[in-house]
Image 1 (spheres, one colour):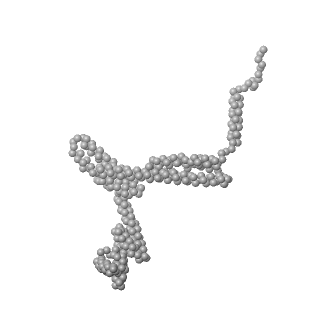
Image 2 (cartoon, rainbow, N blue to C red):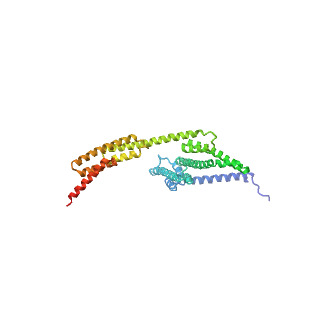
Image 3 (cartoon, rainbow, N blue to C red):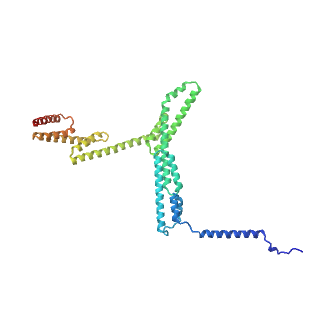
Length: 358
Protein backbone atom coordinates (compact mmCIF):
# COMPACT_ATOMS: atom_id res chain seq x y z
CA UNK A 1 0.00 0.00 0.00
CA UNK A 2 1.30 3.35 -0.92
CA UNK A 3 0.76 6.23 1.48
CA UNK A 4 -2.09 8.55 0.78
CA UNK A 5 -1.00 11.37 -1.46
CA UNK A 6 -1.42 15.00 -0.23
CA UNK A 7 -1.71 18.15 -2.23
CA UNK A 8 1.47 20.26 -1.96
CA UNK A 9 -0.47 23.40 -0.75
CA UNK A 10 -1.96 21.47 2.18
CA UNK A 11 1.43 21.24 3.96
CA UNK A 12 2.26 24.30 6.23
CA UNK A 13 5.45 26.14 5.30
CA UNK A 14 7.63 28.21 7.63
CA UNK A 15 6.55 31.67 6.30
CA UNK A 16 2.88 30.83 6.79
CA UNK A 17 3.55 29.79 10.40
CA UNK A 18 5.45 33.06 11.12
CA UNK A 19 2.66 35.15 9.65
CA UNK A 20 0.11 33.34 11.78
CA UNK A 21 2.09 33.94 14.97
CA UNK A 22 2.59 37.61 14.12
CA UNK A 23 -1.11 38.09 13.55
CA UNK A 24 -1.96 36.44 16.85
CA UNK A 25 0.57 38.68 18.65
CA UNK A 26 -0.83 41.87 17.13
CA UNK A 27 -4.32 40.78 18.02
CA UNK A 28 -3.30 40.20 21.65
CA UNK A 29 -1.66 43.65 21.88
CA UNK A 30 -4.74 45.30 20.46
CA UNK A 31 -6.95 43.50 22.95
CA UNK A 32 -4.72 44.37 25.90
CA UNK A 33 -4.35 47.97 24.73
CA UNK A 34 -8.07 48.27 24.41
CA UNK A 35 -8.48 46.98 27.95
CA UNK A 36 -5.98 49.55 29.16
CA UNK A 37 -7.90 52.30 27.44
CA UNK A 38 -11.04 51.11 29.11
CA UNK A 39 -9.42 51.44 32.61
CA UNK A 40 -10.40 54.71 34.31
CA UNK A 41 -7.59 57.35 34.56
CA UNK A 42 -6.44 58.49 38.02
CA UNK A 43 -8.44 61.39 39.47
CA UNK A 44 -6.33 64.55 38.88
CA UNK A 45 -7.34 65.89 42.30
CA UNK A 46 -6.02 62.75 43.97
CA UNK A 47 -2.86 62.89 41.84
CA UNK A 48 -2.25 66.53 42.76
CA UNK A 49 -2.87 65.91 46.46
CA UNK A 50 -0.45 62.97 46.49
CA UNK A 51 2.26 64.93 44.67
CA UNK A 52 1.87 68.00 46.88
CA UNK A 53 1.96 65.92 50.05
CA UNK A 54 5.20 64.28 48.88
CA UNK A 55 6.56 67.69 47.77
CA UNK A 56 6.99 66.19 44.33
CA UNK A 57 6.17 69.41 42.54
CA UNK A 58 7.62 68.16 39.26
CA UNK A 59 4.94 65.46 39.03
CA UNK A 60 2.29 67.88 40.23
CA UNK A 61 3.33 70.36 37.56
CA UNK A 62 3.11 67.69 34.84
CA UNK A 63 -0.34 66.73 36.06
CA UNK A 64 -1.45 70.36 36.10
CA UNK A 65 -0.11 70.91 32.57
CA UNK A 66 -2.56 68.32 31.23
CA UNK A 67 -5.58 70.04 32.81
CA UNK A 68 -7.72 72.59 31.01
CA UNK A 69 -8.53 75.19 33.67
CA UNK A 70 -11.58 76.43 31.82
CA UNK A 71 -13.05 72.92 31.72
CA UNK A 72 -11.93 72.01 35.27
CA UNK A 73 -14.34 71.79 38.18
CA UNK A 74 -14.20 74.44 40.94
CA UNK A 75 -12.56 71.92 43.26
CA UNK A 76 -9.90 71.12 40.69
CA UNK A 77 -9.22 74.81 40.02
CA UNK A 78 -8.82 75.30 43.76
CA UNK A 79 -6.24 72.48 43.78
CA UNK A 80 -4.37 74.18 40.96
CA UNK A 81 -4.31 77.47 42.88
CA UNK A 82 -3.12 75.59 45.96
CA UNK A 83 -0.34 74.06 43.89
CA UNK A 84 0.87 77.50 42.78
CA UNK A 85 0.86 78.75 46.35
CA UNK A 86 2.66 75.65 47.65
CA UNK A 87 5.38 75.98 45.03
CA UNK A 88 5.92 79.66 45.89
CA UNK A 89 6.00 78.81 49.61
CA UNK A 90 8.42 75.94 48.96
CA UNK A 91 10.77 78.20 46.98
CA UNK A 92 10.72 80.93 49.61
CA UNK A 93 11.32 78.53 52.49
CA UNK A 94 14.23 76.77 50.82
CA UNK A 95 15.80 80.00 49.58
CA UNK A 96 15.48 81.66 53.00
CA UNK A 97 17.13 78.68 54.67
CA UNK A 98 19.94 78.64 52.10
CA UNK A 99 20.58 82.34 52.65
CA UNK A 100 20.70 81.82 56.41
CA UNK A 101 23.30 79.11 55.93
CA UNK A 102 25.27 81.36 53.60
CA UNK A 103 25.14 84.23 56.09
CA UNK A 104 26.61 81.86 58.67
CA UNK A 105 29.42 80.97 56.26
CA UNK A 106 28.12 77.45 55.63
CA UNK A 107 28.50 77.69 51.86
CA UNK A 108 28.50 73.98 51.07
CA UNK A 109 25.34 73.36 53.08
CA UNK A 110 23.63 76.37 51.48
CA UNK A 111 24.35 75.23 47.93
CA UNK A 112 23.52 71.58 48.69
CA UNK A 113 20.16 72.58 50.14
CA UNK A 114 19.23 74.38 46.91
CA UNK A 115 20.42 71.43 44.83
CA UNK A 116 18.14 69.18 46.87
CA UNK A 117 15.30 71.66 46.41
CA UNK A 118 15.68 71.46 42.64
CA UNK A 119 15.05 67.74 42.80
CA UNK A 120 11.60 68.55 44.18
CA UNK A 121 11.01 71.49 41.83
CA UNK A 122 13.17 71.70 38.72
CA UNK A 123 11.18 74.43 36.96
CA UNK A 124 11.02 78.16 37.57
CA UNK A 125 13.82 80.68 38.05
CA UNK A 126 13.76 81.53 41.77
CA UNK A 127 15.85 78.62 43.05
CA UNK A 128 18.48 78.71 40.25
CA UNK A 129 18.79 82.48 40.61
CA UNK A 130 19.21 82.17 44.38
CA UNK A 131 21.86 79.50 43.90
CA UNK A 132 23.76 81.65 41.42
CA UNK A 133 23.59 84.60 43.84
CA UNK A 134 24.89 82.55 46.78
CA UNK A 135 27.62 81.04 44.61
CA UNK A 136 28.69 84.54 43.56
CA UNK A 137 28.70 85.67 47.19
CA UNK A 138 30.85 82.69 48.07
CA UNK A 139 33.31 83.65 45.34
CA UNK A 140 33.53 87.23 46.66
CA UNK A 141 34.12 85.99 50.22
CA UNK A 142 36.68 83.46 49.06
CA UNK A 143 38.66 86.00 47.04
CA UNK A 144 38.45 88.52 49.87
CA UNK A 145 39.83 85.95 52.32
CA UNK A 146 42.52 84.93 49.85
CA UNK A 147 43.51 88.56 49.32
CA UNK A 148 43.84 89.23 53.04
CA UNK A 149 45.99 86.13 53.50
CA UNK A 150 48.24 87.05 50.60
CA UNK A 151 48.49 90.66 51.79
CA UNK A 152 49.70 89.34 55.15
CA UNK A 153 52.23 87.11 53.39
CA UNK A 154 53.38 90.02 51.25
CA UNK A 155 53.92 92.17 54.33
CA UNK A 156 55.96 89.37 55.94
CA UNK A 157 58.10 88.97 52.84
CA UNK A 158 58.68 92.70 52.69
CA UNK A 159 59.79 92.75 56.30
CA UNK A 160 62.25 89.95 55.55
CA UNK A 161 63.84 91.83 52.64
CA UNK A 162 66.98 92.74 54.58
CA UNK A 163 67.41 89.19 55.85
CA UNK A 164 66.94 87.86 52.32
CA UNK A 165 69.58 90.25 51.00
CA UNK A 166 72.04 88.90 53.58
CA UNK A 167 71.86 85.52 51.82
CA UNK A 168 73.96 86.94 48.98
CA UNK A 169 76.98 87.11 51.27
CA UNK A 170 77.17 83.35 51.64
CA UNK A 171 79.16 81.16 49.30
CA UNK A 172 77.10 78.05 50.01
CA UNK A 173 74.83 77.24 47.01
CA UNK A 174 71.84 76.71 49.30
CA UNK A 175 71.88 80.42 50.20
CA UNK A 176 71.61 81.43 46.55
CA UNK A 177 68.86 78.85 46.02
CA UNK A 178 66.85 80.20 48.95
CA UNK A 179 67.37 83.76 47.76
CA UNK A 180 66.06 82.84 44.33
CA UNK A 181 63.04 81.05 45.79
CA UNK A 182 62.15 84.11 47.86
CA UNK A 183 62.55 86.35 44.81
CA UNK A 184 60.31 84.08 42.74
CA UNK A 185 57.73 84.03 45.49
CA UNK A 186 57.71 87.82 45.67
CA UNK A 187 57.17 88.03 41.93
CA UNK A 188 54.41 85.39 41.98
CA UNK A 189 52.72 87.03 44.93
CA UNK A 190 52.88 90.47 43.34
CA UNK A 191 51.32 89.12 40.15
CA UNK A 192 48.48 87.35 41.97
CA UNK A 193 47.79 90.36 44.19
CA UNK A 194 47.62 92.54 41.08
CA UNK A 195 45.06 90.19 39.53
CA UNK A 196 43.05 90.12 42.74
CA UNK A 197 43.20 93.89 42.98
CA UNK A 198 41.81 94.20 39.47
CA UNK A 199 38.98 91.81 40.33
CA UNK A 200 38.08 93.66 43.55
CA UNK A 201 38.11 97.00 41.74
CA UNK A 202 35.78 95.66 39.05
CA UNK A 203 33.54 94.17 41.77
CA UNK A 204 33.28 97.58 43.45
CA UNK A 205 35.41 96.84 46.54
CA UNK A 206 37.80 99.77 46.33
CA UNK A 207 39.30 99.12 49.79
CA UNK A 208 40.43 95.57 49.01
CA UNK A 209 41.54 96.65 45.54
CA UNK A 210 43.72 99.37 47.06
CA UNK A 211 45.18 97.06 49.72
CA UNK A 212 45.93 94.28 47.21
CA UNK A 213 47.49 96.58 44.63
CA UNK A 214 49.43 98.49 47.26
CA UNK A 215 50.85 95.23 48.67
CA UNK A 216 51.83 94.14 45.15
CA UNK A 217 53.64 97.43 44.54
CA UNK A 218 55.49 97.25 47.85
CA UNK A 219 56.75 93.80 46.92
CA UNK A 220 58.09 95.07 43.58
CA UNK A 221 58.81 98.77 44.22
CA UNK A 222 60.98 99.13 41.11
CA UNK A 223 58.05 98.20 38.84
CA UNK A 224 55.44 100.84 37.93
CA UNK A 225 52.41 100.93 40.20
CA UNK A 226 49.25 99.39 38.80
CA UNK A 227 47.10 102.14 37.22
CA UNK A 228 44.02 101.01 39.12
CA UNK A 229 45.81 101.66 42.44
CA UNK A 230 45.42 105.41 41.96
CA UNK A 231 41.83 104.92 40.83
CA UNK A 232 41.02 102.85 43.93
CA UNK A 233 42.61 105.48 46.20
CA UNK A 234 40.62 108.23 44.50
CA UNK A 235 37.41 106.22 44.81
CA UNK A 236 38.03 105.66 48.52
CA UNK A 237 38.84 109.34 49.11
CA UNK A 238 35.66 110.34 47.29
CA UNK A 239 33.65 107.75 49.24
CA UNK A 240 35.10 109.05 52.51
CA UNK A 241 34.18 112.63 51.64
CA UNK A 242 30.67 111.59 50.67
CA UNK A 243 30.28 109.64 53.91
CA UNK A 244 31.47 112.64 55.91
CA UNK A 245 29.05 114.89 54.07
CA UNK A 246 26.16 112.51 54.74
CA UNK A 247 27.13 112.26 58.40
CA UNK A 248 27.40 116.03 58.70
CA UNK A 249 24.03 116.49 57.03
CA UNK A 250 22.44 114.03 59.45
CA UNK A 251 23.99 115.76 62.48
CA UNK A 252 22.96 119.17 61.19
CA UNK A 253 19.36 118.06 60.69
CA UNK A 254 19.22 116.70 64.23
CA UNK A 255 20.82 119.82 65.69
CA UNK A 256 18.32 122.09 63.92
CA UNK A 257 15.45 119.86 64.99
CA UNK A 258 16.53 120.22 68.63
CA UNK A 259 16.78 123.99 68.31
CA UNK A 260 13.31 124.11 66.76
CA UNK A 261 11.98 121.94 69.58
CA UNK A 262 13.26 124.45 72.15
CA UNK A 263 11.90 127.43 70.23
CA UNK A 264 8.46 125.82 70.30
CA UNK A 265 8.48 124.57 73.88
CA UNK A 266 10.65 127.15 75.66
CA UNK A 267 11.55 124.38 78.12
CA UNK A 268 14.90 124.57 79.85
CA UNK A 269 15.55 120.84 79.36
CA UNK A 270 15.11 121.20 75.58
CA UNK A 271 17.64 124.05 75.49
CA UNK A 272 20.15 122.08 77.53
CA UNK A 273 19.63 118.97 75.37
CA UNK A 274 20.19 121.01 72.19
CA UNK A 275 23.35 122.61 73.58
CA UNK A 276 24.81 119.29 74.76
CA UNK A 277 24.12 117.58 71.43
CA UNK A 278 25.53 120.41 69.33
CA UNK A 279 28.72 120.76 71.37
CA UNK A 280 29.22 116.98 71.39
CA UNK A 281 29.03 116.74 67.58
CA UNK A 282 30.37 120.17 66.74
CA UNK A 283 33.52 119.00 64.94
CA UNK A 284 32.16 115.84 63.30
CA UNK A 285 29.05 117.61 62.02
CA UNK A 286 30.54 121.00 61.19
CA UNK A 287 28.05 122.59 63.59
CA UNK A 288 29.84 125.89 64.19
CA UNK A 289 26.84 127.92 63.09
CA UNK A 290 24.45 125.90 65.27
CA UNK A 291 26.90 126.14 68.19
CA UNK A 292 26.96 129.95 67.94
CA UNK A 293 23.16 129.99 67.80
CA UNK A 294 22.66 127.76 70.83
CA UNK A 295 25.29 129.64 72.85
CA UNK A 296 23.46 132.89 72.10
CA UNK A 297 20.15 131.31 73.17
CA UNK A 298 21.71 130.09 76.41
CA UNK A 299 23.15 133.52 77.18
CA UNK A 300 19.85 135.22 76.39
CA UNK A 301 17.90 132.77 78.55
CA UNK A 302 20.40 133.09 81.38
CA UNK A 303 20.28 136.88 81.49
CA UNK A 304 16.49 136.94 81.22
CA UNK A 305 15.94 134.43 84.03
CA UNK A 306 18.65 136.04 86.12
CA UNK A 307 16.71 139.31 85.96
CA UNK A 308 13.47 137.49 86.82
CA UNK A 309 15.16 136.02 89.86
CA UNK A 310 16.30 139.48 90.90
CA UNK A 311 12.71 140.68 90.66
CA UNK A 312 11.46 137.79 92.79
CA UNK A 313 14.20 138.43 95.37
CA UNK A 314 13.36 142.11 95.53
CA UNK A 315 9.69 141.29 96.08
CA UNK A 316 10.60 139.05 99.02
CA UNK A 317 9.93 135.76 97.23
CA UNK A 318 13.24 134.23 98.24
CA UNK A 319 12.09 130.67 97.57
CA UNK A 320 10.97 131.60 94.05
CA UNK A 321 14.22 133.45 93.36
CA UNK A 322 16.29 130.53 94.59
CA UNK A 323 14.37 128.04 92.41
CA UNK A 324 14.68 130.35 89.41
CA UNK A 325 18.42 130.81 89.78
CA UNK A 326 19.04 127.12 90.49
CA UNK A 327 17.23 126.20 87.26
CA UNK A 328 19.48 128.37 85.09
CA UNK A 329 22.73 127.39 86.79
CA UNK A 330 23.46 124.61 84.18
CA UNK A 331 23.36 127.28 81.44
CA UNK A 332 26.44 129.03 82.80
CA UNK A 333 28.33 126.64 85.09
CA UNK A 334 30.68 128.49 87.44
CA UNK A 335 29.20 131.94 86.92
CA UNK A 336 30.44 133.93 89.95
CA UNK A 337 27.54 136.43 90.01
CA UNK A 338 24.97 133.62 90.09
CA UNK A 339 26.89 131.72 92.75
CA UNK A 340 26.89 134.80 94.97
CA UNK A 341 23.15 135.28 94.52
CA UNK A 342 22.47 131.64 95.39
CA UNK A 343 24.72 131.77 98.45
CA UNK A 344 23.11 135.00 99.73
CA UNK A 345 19.62 133.54 99.17
CA UNK A 346 20.54 130.34 101.03
CA UNK A 347 21.65 132.40 104.05
CA UNK A 348 18.42 134.41 103.98
CA UNK A 349 16.31 131.25 103.79
CA UNK A 350 18.28 129.68 106.62
CA UNK A 351 17.77 132.76 108.83
CA UNK A 352 14.06 132.81 108.07
CA UNK A 353 13.78 129.15 108.97
CA UNK A 354 15.52 129.75 112.29
CA UNK A 355 13.18 132.64 113.09
CA UNK A 356 10.17 130.40 112.54
CA UNK A 357 11.37 127.89 115.06
CA UNK A 358 9.92 128.31 118.62
